[in-house]
Length: 196
Image (cartoon, rainbow, N blue to C red):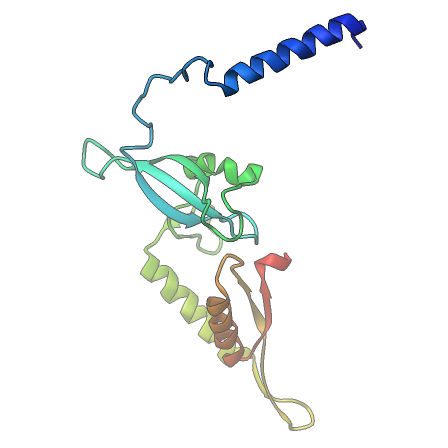
């Protein structure tokens, strides 16, 4: 701690009082303005999205540059929290703040892939083929394992051999519809990513 004598203390407070009084009377210097430059995101396209990492479902603002033409391939160049989003109000956790690395990762899976039984290679398939295959396998499993009545003869309509894990970033309405769809199939194993 600095040792200040009584005389030095009075000089400091007197100088501070005189300086602040002069500033209030308008004797302060003019405001120094920095050079105005073009904002780096002015030419970008802003897109709202939801963070895919956890069940909080924070809002994101993603900025991309390029119009998709041959010479200007569109690419995300900046990500920040959405200040208008009711969940995170513009803040992001470290994983959400580093989301741009996830987007530009060469290991990121962007298309459905299929690996045949016994094979060691994945092959790219279309979204239609992937959804058709999933639907076909779900139908086969449900037909083979659906339990209509229990041992007492009571109607139970259960499908216990397949489960579903729902997305946690969905709205209440989407969650309600997903729940109704899964339960109408008789599926008992149903959970949400938020609990995992």
